[in-house]
Image (cartoon, rainbow, N blue to C red; front, side):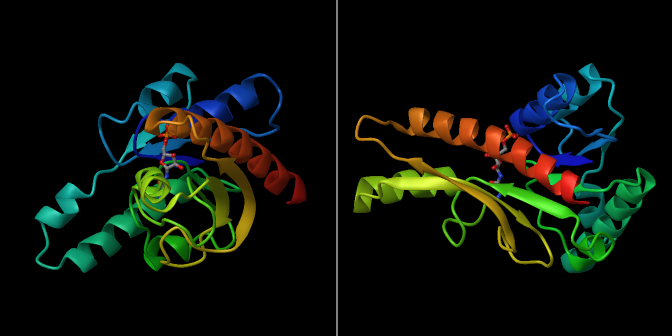
Length: 198
Ligand code: GAR
C-alpha cells in the first residue's frame, strides 16, 4: 500500500520494479491527500485501486484542528486496513500521521525522506541541504528509509541510508535529480528487503 501527495516518482519506481520483476510485491492500493497528485494517474495507469482523502473537510467541520486531524487519521486507517496491506509506504506523503493512524499498523509504516538521519526533517529537506551547502560548505547529503513508530517528524528506526555527495559543479537541480535517483533505488531495495524478512 502506498500513500503519496505529489508527483509520485517514487511510486513509479515501485511500480516499475514490480512490473519488471525486480520487486516481488503487489501494490494493493494508492491513497493521495491532494486531488491533483500525479501519483493518482500513475496508479490508475497500472490499474491499482486509488482513493483520495483530503484533510480540508475535516478541518472545516471542527473547531479543534487537532481533533480534526485525529478523525482524518482514523478514517485513513479504515481505508488502509480495508486493503489488508503487509506494509504501508509513505512515498512523498506530506501529512504528519498521528497515533490514531499509526497504532493500527505497528512496525509496518515506512517513510522515505530525502536527507540523512537527524538532518533536515520536514518538507524542504533538499532546499535545506542546498542552503547548508551554500552557506557552510556542506559536501554531502543523502536519503533514508525509516519506520514510523510515532508522531516524530522524519524520525524513527532507520532501515537504510544512502549518502549523496554535493559536487562543486552541482546546482540545485542537479543535486535534486541525484537525490531522487538515490531514493528511487533505495526505496525499491528497502521495500524488497522488508517484505523478504516478513
Ligand atoms: C521525495 O523526495 C520524498 O523523499 C519526499 O517527497 C518527495 C516526493 O517525491 N518526502 C519528504 O520530504 C518527507 N518528509 P515523489 O512524489 O516524486 O515520489
